[in-house]
Length: 498
Image (tube, rainbow, N blue to C red; front, top):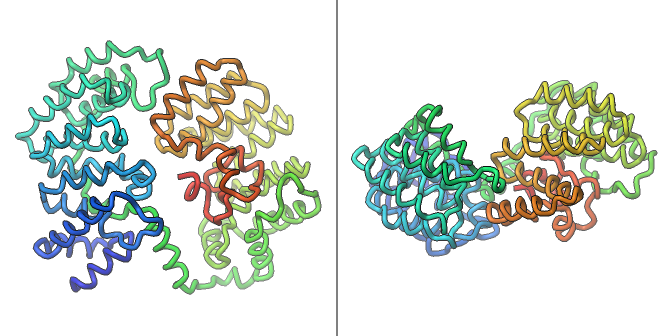
C-alpha cells in the first residue's frame, strides 16, 4: 500500500478502510506534515465550498490528534469558528459526538486558548461545547491534568453571561460521566440556582445534574478511537456515494428478472412522483398507483429486496410508497391509504407506515381504529421519536389536545438530532399559539432559536420559497424518509432535513 495510494484515498473518499488507517498511523513522519498543511488550508479558508474537492482536511484533525500533535488546537479552534451552516456541512453530528477527541488528546497545553474560545459568545455554542467536553475528558489521557480540568469547570460555572445555563448543566452531567467527583458539591450548588420550571431547557436541567452525580456510571472515554469518525464530511460523502453508484453495475437478482414488467411500472411511478400533486389529485391515477403498490407488496417481502429494487431502478421507491398514502387521502381514498399502511408496515419502513397510518385514521375520523393503531405503534416502537410525533399528530387530529401535547413534549425530551427536534417544534409552537398560550410558545421559540438558528428551514413556508410547488401535504408534515419537496430527488432527512 503506497503513500500515493493512501493520499489519493484521503482526497477522494469520505471513508477510509481500516487497513489504510493503520498504514497512515504507522507512517507518521510522512503524514503529519501532510495533514498539517491540509488543516492549515481549512483554517485559512474558514468556510466550506458548495462542492468539496478534498476530504483530507476534514480527517486531518482526528489523525493529528492520534499522532499526538499538540500544536493543532489553535487551528482547530479557527475551523470551529466557521458559520453554523459550514460547521454542519463539514462536521455534521461529529461536531457534538466526536469533536471533543482532539481537545482531550492534545489540548493539555492550550487551556487558555480553549478557555477564550469556550467563553466567546459569537462562536457556535455546540462547537464551544465540544472544546469543553474535551477538557472534561482530558484527565483520561493526561491524569496529571485532572486538577486543571476541575479548575476550568469551576471558572466556567461563573460564565452564565456567555454560556446558556442549560449547557452549563449539561457540562456538569458530562463531568459526572467522566468521574470528576471533585465537582459534586459545586454541581449541587449550581443546580440549586436553576429553576427547571422557569423555561424549557434544551440540553439539561438542574434535576439532570443532581441525578447525574447520584446515579450515572462512569463512561469509558478510551474506548473510541479517532479513526472511527474520520468520514464526517457530509457533502463529500454524498458526492462520493453518487459517483460510486454511477460506476457500479448492479447484479440483477432472478426475482427482479421474473417481475421485469412490474419493476418498470414501479420505476416510472417512483421517478415521476412529483407529477401528481395533492391539490389536483383525481381518484383514477392515484388509485392506479395504489393498485401498483399493492401488487409490489406481494413481490417485495424483505428490506433487502427493497434495496435491490432501488439500486436496480435508481429510483427512491421507498419515498414513493411513503408519500402515496397521503396522496390517497388527498384523493378521498382514506380507506385505501390505511390499508396500504397496514400492508407495507409488514414489509419495510414499519415505524413510518404505522405512524402515518395512525394520522390517516385520525384525520378520517375513525377514532377507534386510530387509537388501536396508536397503541400498536407505541408498543412496537416505544423509543422512536417520530412515532411519538406522529402519535401526537393523530391525537391532535382527533381533538385530543392534552394527549397531543404530552406526546410532543415526550418527543422533544427524546430528540437528540436537530431534525427530530425541528419536527417537534414545528408542531408544538403553532399548537400552543392556537390554544392562546402565546407566552409559552414565544419562550419555546426563543429557546430553540439560539440552539438552532436554521429552525425555519423545517417550516413549510421556507420550503415553499426554495421549491417549485411542492406537495402541500409534505410541506406541513414531512417524514424522515420522504422525498424532499425541493425536487432534488434526495430523502428529506438528507436534503432540507439536515
